[in-house]
Length: 371
Length: 206
Image (tube, rainbow over all chains, first blue to last red; front, side, top):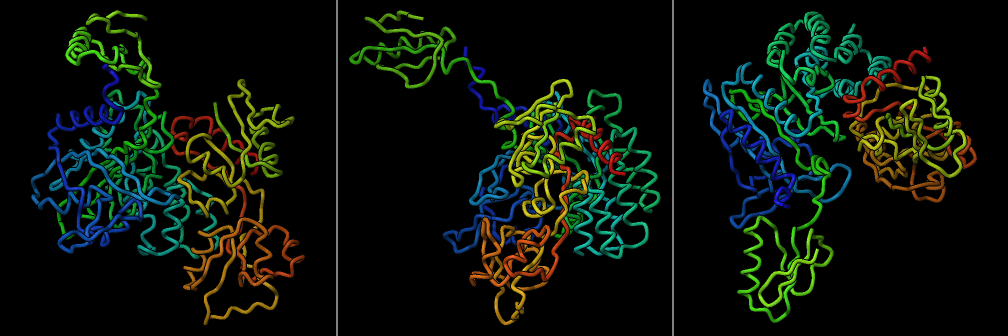
């Protein structure tokens, strides 16, 4: 029977992940496809792609097809700290693909915790990120980092400084020679290049990387970064996911928006990261909110080729009937086959390029199977 | 199996020598004929020759786990890859060149002919200079001679092509050399092989 294939890959993933998130109390959140353009123009650096589809609505307001979910959720929730809101969503976003013209509709599924987010909440989000990845593939890696380390290492340079931006890109690219080149061509504070190189190299399995992270965090005067990493990753100890968790300091983000714990998920079968998330208290501040927030999104467009299996046939039975057969005879025959648990495609002549397990003909109201 | 995209040409051949010495041999690549893919199952490696500007595409999209690309290509296309090692070969520079008597008239928009649109835009944006990009795919040197542009932004190796066309370098935009790049996902799942290659190459060069 072919009913296993009646769900698309996207639908299966959405059902699985939504069920997972609701088990942990996350409430499904629905939002409009449209949002006021101003929300995105004020936070355009937060958006993954530059292009936003804008239009004037019938009331004369400049609107946009939403390119991002998180901004809408922040805008439409209230500061309830110390209480926490746990929300999950599956929504389309509209973005301009990198290196190409035009726009794409991309489905995202994800979750957000907003309000009085504590370290238990951060751990829970990381755990759900790992569970999400595990539900998609038997072979995944969740890279986790703490932005406080890169922030402290770069702190003598102000935000927006071109050298600081270039150095942060080198950290994201694991580009040690790039850090050396920048240090050669620019006067950097004493020891900055060495500390950034040490940061890039302090990646690996938590047991190996944490001692190096701790030493570096102490040197940078931010021991709480190592403490927080160690605390939130402790939920993975002695679990089936322990081997899939890495500390990887190349996971970075725009420090105008993100802070503290940031993470990214990879599957062996997919060339790009399929999950991305982190704490975004800085974005909350920019939107005049004093509460905290963390979330992640799974990019369904990158999972399109995850399931390459194709059904053996498009339907179980091709039922051919003579052109002048009464509709009630065809209906009765189709219903009988469906009642046997089969999928049926009824036609008077044929079904183009579709494939079937068996062919049957309706002759004098009787189904004659011809395999 | 480690999939490696090499840039076609002399640079690619030089890179293969480095990789072979690092313990990733594939002897059949020495007698290529018209083939583009070469595999050594025993060494766990598969090489393919691709157009130099396409290496980043193969690596970013995961068709190749690692590859070698010039810094010019990396800065032009900004692929989302790890840049693991400066191989120190294929050295040249990105430069602004123009006829010897060129003087930049700040009252006018500067017309810049180049294959490297993003590089040129970034370079002049940092200087606050308004420019008009003229995107060409080859024979860039002709542009200022025939009045199509005021300057060119292009790769300069020895400078002989510029000299033969009566052009001189006015500014160096950045130095270029070949970089070993890796797909981010491959770096997670084939980390041992990639790290070994980087270690061997870095060790061989020190």
